[in-house]
Amino acid sequence: MQKIVNGVALFSGVVSLGLVIGGSMVYLQKDNIINGVKKQLINSVSESVQNLLPGMVDGAVPELPGTTGGAIPGGVPSLPF
Image 1 (cartoon, rainbow, N blue to C red):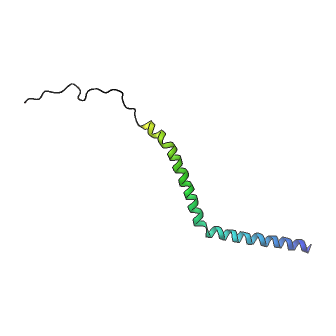
Image 2 (image 1 turned 30 degrees about the horizontal axis):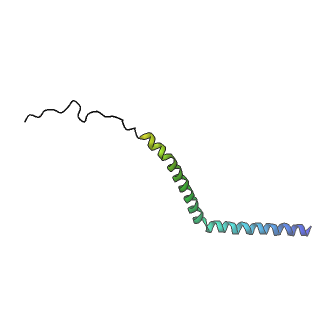
Image 3 (image 1 turned 180 degrees about the vertical axis):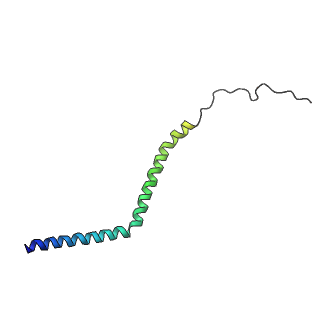
């Protein structure tokens, strides 16, 4: 029975030590983790915008007419010189 209690205590100590070390590493590396997530987010957003932008521009720009009328409607007015 004593061996089981010692094994559980040893396992508990190892788990506690792992949590303390893991938490400390995350705390010390939090700035790097945050910057990495920011870079991934910015890259994914810019890829999405690049994929959507051509379709939005094509839909917003009207087509050019094939033919046009005269430059001045109704002809050129005569000047009184």
